[in-house]
Image (cartoon, rainbow over all chains, first blue to last red; front, side, top):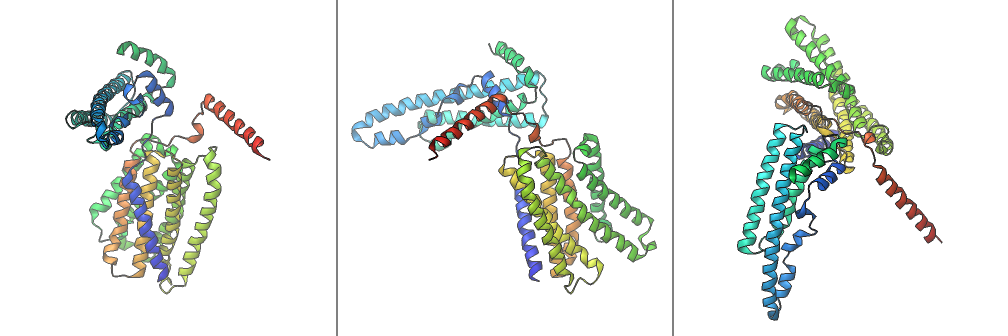
Length: 190
Length: 262
């Protein structure tokens, strides 16, 4: 009796473990590191290369200045500067996103294999990312740079995701052809 | 399997057969039959068995002596339990291909686990052999199924978790085979244990196994619809520059250690 109960318990635990693994889905195939580096080299990404861009939206320093009544004016100036910088950063991220989208289309145009389902997923994520970044820009514009600082720290994520998607497509082309692609892309972008 | 459960609707039996045929077709079409030969062998055995059971039904199950049919059914089920080890092996050899650095680490650890699980399974069957309900041969199959099933599912889960912790990309094919198979064996273990513990739920649980097998076939068909094998670790080239940097750093560490050592 106890043996059977133990088998039931083990069966339940294992079944739950497998179902949880199943719900997580197959592990995503990450882009090859060399392809990712090549994308970074071919497409100049100014927004993501800006080190600690998310710190622009961190309100810790602003709160420190605001805590001192003598520094209220400085805090207001600081907030205004941060707002302008954040807006600039979001604009650059949007440009990066568009550049990566164009680069991915360029790769497919050059013969990189893809599937309709994949294209549809990328299109959805692009639309979502553009909406997210524009909403962020609107919130910075109307409510200031620190209103949704926690959410805003994820502003780089859509560009990173698009970068990986482009690297995945680039990885399907033999690396021997990458220099030619880079030249063609530079002439197209120029 | 579904053929001997008369209460199971014919639609499920038909759906299972269609999925089996579909799976074989995809394996042959995509060439995965060569990539996963052990898995394919198991699947072909299952298909042959299903075909034989269908042939018996078509011929007329009443014309065959019940003991012959029962003996064929349970013997092939027991052989199936043993053949499932082929799938476990298929998963292991793809997750940790020979020649890869992980194979050397994993093969020893998994060898010990496999031996331990085998002893556990044999011990569990041996313990239950003397149990009051295991007098007839027919009753031994559930004991075999759940003991070896538990061992196999633990082994598959270990492979999946190890692969995950080392960041090994299994690919859709292997991932689908492993997760679907693991869930099915776990459910089978659970089902067999409950049926042996109490017969109250038998009218419902007797459907669970054929239904779950159809579910397994559906998952496998999805997973193997297109070739998506795991990238072999041994075939991944290491950039020469990285190798030089690593060697340099390692030599520096060693010389620092020698200097620090009293």
